[in-house]
Image (tube, rainbow, N blue to C red; front, top):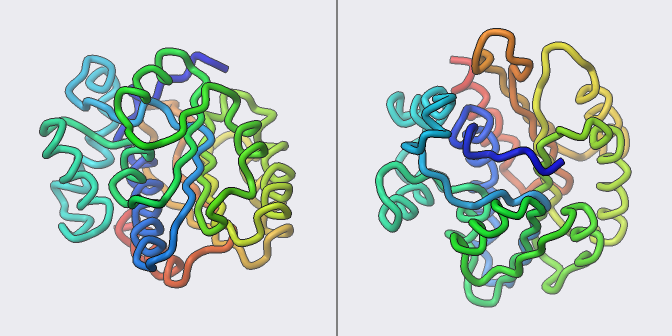
Length: 258
């Protein structure tokens, strides 16, 4: 449970899908002059160096943010590209923001952020990377239950586990239902891998679709990172999706399909 380190996968195709939609939603939500809460259950270290030995070992970023930049998949004024430019201005040309730093780019004075990370080294790195957030070194699902409904009540939660614990697939629908009952105005964003050889994610998403018929599902496909790799796509399920997100998700899916 504590072995996963995202530095090996930072900036890959799944990150591009997840972070492009997350940045779009945060940009949309922060246009209103009303305070916002941001909650993240599995934050990671927040800031990644794509020139590090770990990132270069897998080279997964080349098929993600690298391909997006070279192919101009996202315009320069896209929310993710604005956040990426800001982070690289401060941390160098090989820097890549995890979701906590993407959120930090958009959050304003008066907004609040709760970030959970259980891995000791990742938590220490997160503390160095982010400012102004409340950090929790504990299980992210437990943290989310403890802080919801948040103050302010308007806000977004990102649920982004590694899925090393396969039981998460079965537990997440109930978890999101519990959170939604307590926090019925929250935008709840779940990332999940699209896998080639098991149907755990399909059962999970079908259950979520029944529980949240107005939820938004966005899935994209891409080649596996290496031969035999089980992840062949990326999925996002959003409870209480912001207006316009469906159009942005469709536009992004068309880019991946092209």
